[in-house]
Structure formats: C-alpha cells, structure tokens
Length: 152
Image (cartoon, rainbow, N blue to C red):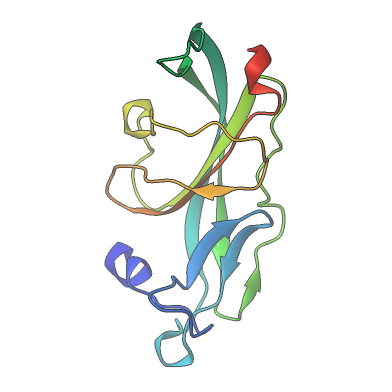
C-alpha cells in the first residue's frame, strides 16, 4: 500500500505531483483516474509543535542559530478516496510566537522524533512548506514556520 500511495500521481497534470498530499487545508486526494483506488485508503496524520529557541545572535559574519524541539500534538487516522477531494478536519494547526508546526501523512509505524527535520528554514510567512521526513511509509509532510522568529 505504501508503494502504491507513494507512486500515485495527481490528475492535475503537474509534472510528478502526488495524488495524496498535505497542504494548508489538510489532506488532499486527487489521483489520476487510471490509478484511482476502488475503495478509500486509510492514512495516519501526525501533527507536532515545533518550539524554536535562538541559541546564537546574528552577527555581520554569521546568521543567528536556532534549536528545535518537537512535541507530539496528536496522531489520527483518516480515510481518503476513492473520490477526489479534501479530507475534513485535517488542516494543520497554526503556529504562534516561537512555535511552528509539522504535519506528516504516513502509513505503518509511528514516526520517531529523530526522523523529523532539524534543518527547518525560519521564514516571515506562515504558508506551509513541504519538508522531508525520513522513514518508511511517509507520504507527505509540511512545515508552518512560527511568527515573529526574531524575538525567540
């Protein structure tokens, strides 16, 4: 099932886009018609708080350095498909001052904290950014940066 969903292409026509992805509205299921499953597939969604702490101030030569600490918010199971559309109640939680979020859609075993990314880019926007999460069964992952990072 993992191989099937990892290789499920989107019907949107965008080159190499995935049929099951996470975005600002949550899980989005839009597979090509010829690859559509006959019944709904169940995927897990793990959401984490990302607490950001500045460990070194920026200088003229070096950028500021930050450390990240992950805290699990929840893990839920959701059915996607076989029809196109958004899966309700899967939108990522918004960030706060010094706290962002990472959401991961996956199959199988739960994601260990060491598999989560520690090279996150702190941005001035709260738009979700795709990130790479190591581990078998990971289908899609997004990161929402905290607001007001400079004050952390």
